[in-house]
Amino acid sequence: GMSFLNLVDIDAVYGLRRNTKGYGEALEAFDARIPEIVENMQEDDLLIITADHGNDPTFKGTDHTREYIPVLAISKSLKHPTHLPEGHFSDIAETISENFGVASTGNGTSFLKELN
Image (tube, rainbow, N blue to C red; front, side):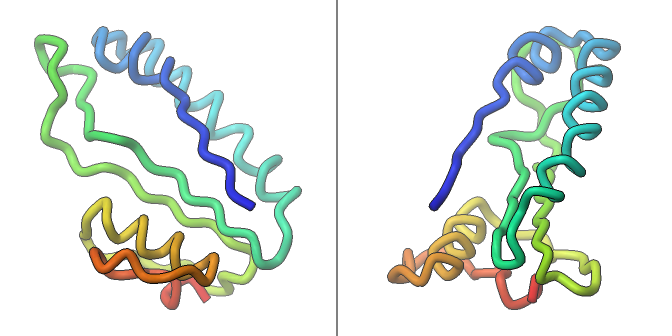
């Protein structure tokens, strides 16, 4: 199965409002729960944590900024940490497709093999 979660408040309440203190605290609160999630994962589960856009909460204004998005991929089958190359949103979609054994999206490059 697949779960898709959008933690919109980190961005909408803190990031886009340029509340750096709240933004940092919200990220730390989420980060603190990641081990709990990983502990409950099965060997073949894949957790991908990303964002829909980059954000610099110290930038003036409320528009999106040009930072790269984070992509954290966590799996118990990943035996050695690796650095993923710069890529595209479509690479995430292609990785999910390959992970579930469904037809290729035809766009992007899966990074699943780098995780196994």
